Image (tube, rainbow, N blue to C red; front, side):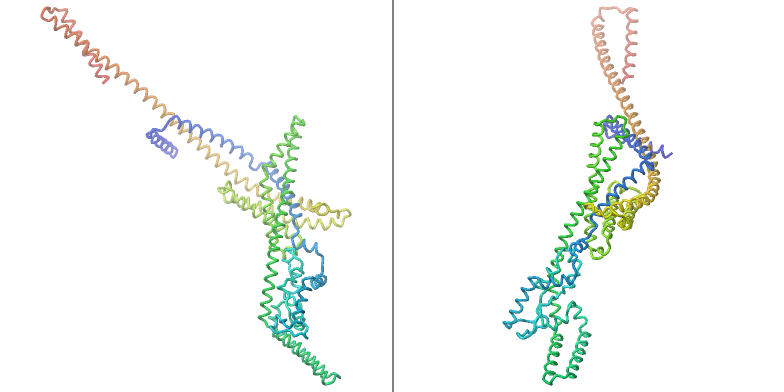
Length: 565
């Protein structure tokens, strides 16, 4: 019943269109074109349905993933080192070595010379107490932010700046008395301020013990007095520290140091992200091209007619296919660049674990791939369950790759104990690293293939159902379009019949008009002739019979004309 209603609705709708004087021929042509397109789409749906869940198709997907992940692992491995790890590798120096280098730096010597010159002139000010330093006192040039703190600063390593370049900045070198400088030592200003009450109490007790020893000594009273005055002055120099002055100088020094570090980190991170992206893209492109060439070679071997020309043709196809897939190479580069930036943001944490940078990059790559999939216009209308499953595949691939990273390290450590495995390969690392990575990719790939296969089966089941529904809908659309075509054909036939009847009717009216005019002319001539001879002729029985026949013919003609009217 619903189908009949649908057909009636189609018929009424088309009739409304006809009432608006639509071009029937164009409408029929359009419907026929739609019908052909629907048939074509139906065939494509049937072919797609056959492909869904096909073992060959699944095998191809898994093989593609294996290629992709193996190339990806090599790309991650050659970009794994963080800026901090790179700096430590290039500068294997201890704090003692760096500390001496800072004190021997020309900038330190020059500012220290200027400080002593000011002292001799009597205009040297203690930057930590606000008091003048007298010519007879011992001033020190203090690193407000200590050498040790700068040496251990991980961001400095990311910025690729030497310790002496930051420690000996003008803002970080401040004159103070010797006692306060030694008391400060490697501590930061904030530590000095925070621990001041407890520290001052300890300083006073130490001074009391020192003076007590002097009193108990064999020195003369004068020597005792001078020694205790010296101790008391050293204590007072320490106690004279002005917290606000020290914090102000510390803030100025840190601002100057952090400015250089920030600029350096941004610059070095940007350079590394670009280099890592190019390396990852190069490896990805190389593996993609190699895969296409090998596939082309396999097709060549399978072909019946083998010739050099057919080989070249397959290679051309492989190269063409490679260039068509360059977008994925660009995606790899983008993911690598973003992953590098993210890993460098967490640089100090990442650098404590050898492979953590690779894991972060792989995670970033998986997230970006999932986002790209969800943002793709072709995927927006897919069922939520299939979207979740596809994203699950992407996440699974990322987790498998993460497992490969750590498993590869395990294999590498074992293989390094084998003679000959320590050989270094340019850009790629040791032979043990490459073989370990291959074995790890193989093991993880098998596990990943099983999981991906299960997810693919779920997706295939959903897609089969969708394909079946789509096929039914497409068939219904075809039936609907066929019915529309039938209605249009019927309408065209009705139109042609009406046109034919109208033409016949017009011709009949035209003939009736001609016959009527002819009859009137004949009757007029007859009456005229009869009137002329009326007085001279005698009507006989023959004339009467003739007139009756004429009257009858006239009546018949009138009936005929009345019929056409």
